[in-house]
Image: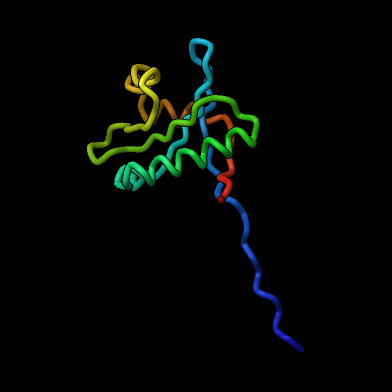
Length: 108
């Protein structure tokens, strides 16, 4: 008899996210590994765009904002300027308590 076919694992990576509405605008906060902060700006943008496409495909409205813990233990983020004030007022503990959706990252 032949060998069994190897099992394929095509599952897309899934992330818990915080989908929030603030001042009539939606934001999708995606906690990522701290290594995200060490990536080049171009690579960060590529990943953020992939999350944005996935959020749109999942009918989760809003701007996607990756957040991570920096080397000093503070929350870092990649977001449009209008969101900076709000994001500077929260921390990773807040984000952890606000997780309310899951998002599967679509590969492209």
